[in-house]
Length: 158
Image 1 (tube, one colour):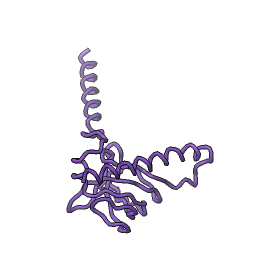
Image 2 (cartoon, rainbow, N blue to C red):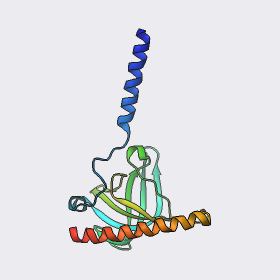
Image 3 (tube, rainbow, N blue to C red):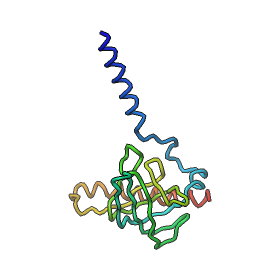
Image 4 (cartoon, rainbow, N blue to C red):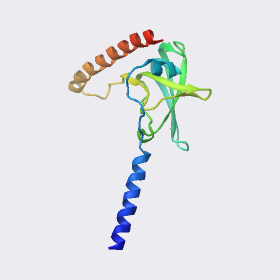
């Protein structure tokens, strides 16, 4: 019986400690003046390249800005760092995707996490079947409409 209690106690500690390692966002996804002010850059752009660093478990996303709202210039290629795992708040991107992002940063560069406001606006759909593609078109149109609405709100908040 004593061994059973010990096993239960150790299992509980393991489960609780594992749960504490998962990514948690302190804020919701609402668009506020504080969030706009805190963002180092707000933009949309195409993912050109992704460099993964297996030692630090981070990825550097190279993005060519096609729409600059704050902190960057149109046509500029910027680097945005993220974790390579969603469990540690990283995002997953692919070359060719178009993203809208509100990123944080400072002297060490830009950073994005799943807790930051961002949205994939389009992707390379060459591997998707036509019936799935038709279903996806409505979703992409909604994403772009949401992005345009965000821009209107951001401009009012700035």
